Length: 632
Image 1 (cartoon, rainbow, N blue to C red):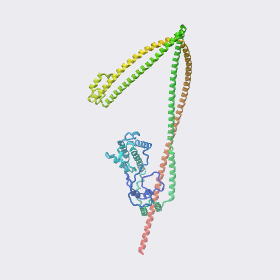
Image 2: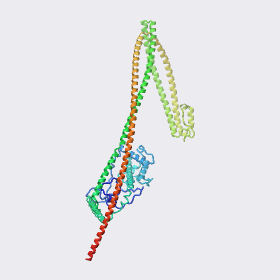
Image 3: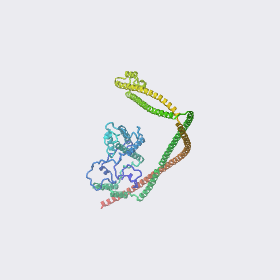
Image 4: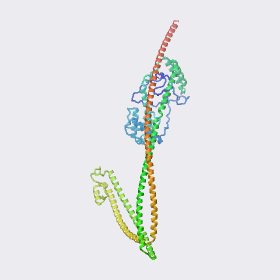
């Protein structure tokens, strides 16, 4: 047992774990150089058995050691690397680590979804340089170097060389990402161990010293021989030997059990106090307030959206009200026109007389004119439909021509033919600017400017332009013909309408129809007026309610914002006080432990001096006894 380990009176686990050896007897270790990584090799089964004296074994007990070598079983990765949610979590962890450590390149979660091999090698080199600053990524056989480095670091799973050729592929990126996350955890552990070495550097100076003294060496050799014999017989645990050895050491160094118990009790009290403080610090009220802030922001967004909806609803109602007002004015004008027409027809009816034969003849002429109007209306609709189809065809043809012209310009830009200063233009203008340049002169100009490799393309464009021109001329002729037909039909229709108007003035039946229409329009007028008043009332009430709700929401938002700011200040003050208390407590604990360490060293020195005096007395007695024996 070394002095550093024997100076610790309590057998309870330490608050801060260290990477120092906890074995009973170990060879001196050289100090680790700062900034240089000493990469450990994976330990075999035999090396683990040689260096562990007190820990429980992982293999079964009672088995004889037949061979020192064993085949390594291929382990299966238990992590859900094919789960998309887990992969996204690993990507976010990698992105946060790179940004925290100051990765030189620009890296985001989106770019880490399927990175290239070059980007992966940059990331791997950056992370590994945190372990070994002198590392440089080799330029050749990278697909063999990366798996070898991970294997030397102790990565428990196999990473194939083929995965290095296509890192960003969906079937290889999860396994590579898992290896990178494991490497990040290794870097964090290494940084933590380095910090502990710097914090407890005074304890490592005496950790390599070997206990001297005849009795201690004898006890240790007996313990080693006994445990090694049982180890060779197949035993894996040595609890009885450990307890016997510790009891002998306590008797050898006169260990005070009462002092150990009191120190353990003090340590337990301090550990409980530290755990209580840690639990109090872990109750993150700031996260609760942030959650409440997010909820309040969501409510505010909902209120703002509701306000915008109310404003749009108000605008729609105003538009409807204006439309109804316009319709009301138009209806009033139409009513006035109908009244004037009624008075005129009443005057005509009172000034003329017709016989029943005239009425029958007028009715017969009316029916014939109505049939003629129907046939002309059908022909007019057909002509309009034909004109509409022709216009659609013309528009489609124009769109096709514009698309082809845009494709020509795109292809010319891709081939670097336009503008005039392009690389392949050679000072010539290949651009067709407007549709007015589709004439023969433009085609001749383009034909003279474009080189031999594009002549076939120009010929196709000329043919398409000529075809579209002919189609345009034919469509224009058809449109002119249709327009002339429409004008002729319109003149005929005007004449027929004039005849119908003169005949309708002579019928008594029209008086009844006009009276009926007048009643209907008056009823509709009243219903429209009632509906307008109702809409005005509803719009006014809805606007007032919306304004009141908006004012209440603004007041509530300001109140909640003020409360959130006050709570944030309170949380910050509480966190500052808790951290100050914890730091003071840790400093007190460290000072107390240093005092106890000095006290134990002093007691140990006094006991050692007393033992030397006793040993000297024993030697004197032994010499006197030997002298007496020789004299006899």
